[in-house]
Amino acid sequence: MRIAAAVLALFLADAAGAERCSALSGERTVALVELYTSQGCSSCPPADRWLSGLGARGYVPQRVVPLSLHVDYWDYIGWKDPYAKGEFSARQRKLTQLQRSALVYTPQVLLQGRDFRRWGSAAFDEAVARINAQAAKARIALEIRSVGRQALEVEARAELLDRTQKDDAALYLATYENKLSNRVTAGENRGRTLAHDYAVLEWEGPFAFSRDARLLEQRVLPLLPEAVPANSGVVGFVQNRSTTEVLQALMLPACPA
Image (cartoon, rainbow, N blue to C red; front, side):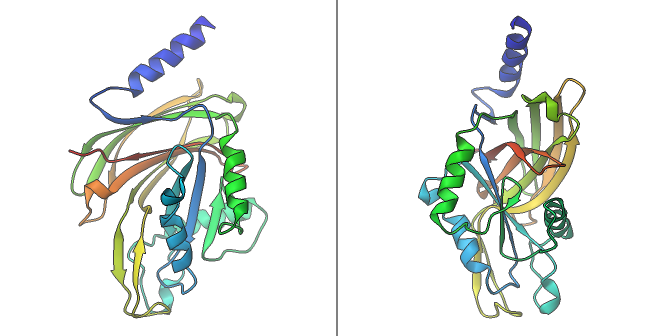
């Protein structure tokens, strides 16, 4: 018990600091919400607005970490989504395959790595409440060491509390930006101005855990060429790569200068 307490104290000491832009995950599980969307998809804007409105509904980062991942498989119809990446499409397909499903679609919401079609109903509130009631199976600490116009310098620490998942668990890091807006001039949304929050800009991982079920990563994560640092931030989450279960998630907005 003394050894475990000492390890926890060291983790907290390394992660915390009054002068730092940092965050440490809590004892309960935070729900990871992934929205797979595209500016080329006419049915996606309502889902984009729903994701943007989660904070106003009381879903603070201590309860829900929302991410908007723009896929590139709609680009062929005439409008290239400026936030789309092939790796986001690949992640969506991979998670779908792990759930033994062949259906990939937009807008799609994944809750804790699993397809969740009733995102616009009370079923979402109930599901998040169940997730938040569970003890976290991992601990994450994030620190933004510096903020530039084109990148965030990030340090991430993570520790598995459920060590039976060590062989399959991994840490992922993502930068995001809020308050993005684009006028679409082609494709299904031609003539519309679309707004996005929590749009993922860069995605790194998986980072495997060491034999002691801990890890430390220091990364420089790119932002958009004309990013607004005050609207940006970083997300870290630990996920089981075999079952898709999310063990813990943490969001850290860039702190004011």
